[in-house]
Length: 334
Image (cartoon, rainbow, N blue to C red; front, side, top):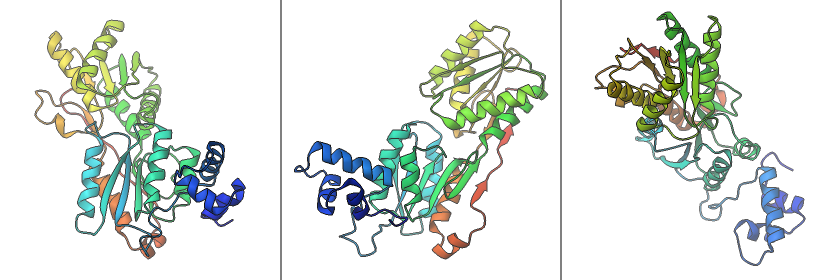
């Protein structure tokens, strides 16, 4: 069997003819459910992706760059997409977007569909994938760029920041201001691996100074200003002596600021606030919130630049991982 699995390999392992394997993977009706399930499972185990355009284009590729992100509803990933689009704007390549919803199984489906069109490259947010997704990406024979995170083992190219370091740096900044009763509020926990790493780095940074988080709220839902306001109230009710709250996102810290305004609390005198991402939405607020610049636009540009590079330049590239160092911006809320 070759490194890149073929339809023939799938048919051989599944114990069927190539014609049957092809019909099953194309969802043709005259294949039994049991046989279809066996063939589909075999294809996933081998990392085989059907080529939807092999018969239509001699090049067996299209001028598309696949981009897989967890969400489009947040303020975070559109900036990554803007960087990608800007970098590709003067080429013949176009980005096509897939959304995983922070789920590894959904990401697997999106990646399989993306690769079936034989794009020129694939940009995927994060380093954590299902085993089937990892097999597909390894067998793809196109540039694969994992973005946003460098804390782990990339499959090919990687562009991002260390979220562990981002958490540690914010811990240092908060402790340096003299705060000791410190809370944390996170969303999409535990599905957002990057937020989890920031919490880990933050906790480690505090422990270095003999401090443990005073209280924390790990919410499974999405970030919103309303939820940031609600969870801030909950934290302060539970631990009224909390002096500072670190949020997993700027959107949530904006909600914290709204709570302070509503309750007549002075920021940072009564409560210090810090978020993450350095969102454009922070500009113009009455109080400049502390945050961390995560260089989302630059990450998108760099990832697209790797896809655009000539194949020989990609092969010769010594720097497989490009790291942007997170920068804490103290603002007026610490």
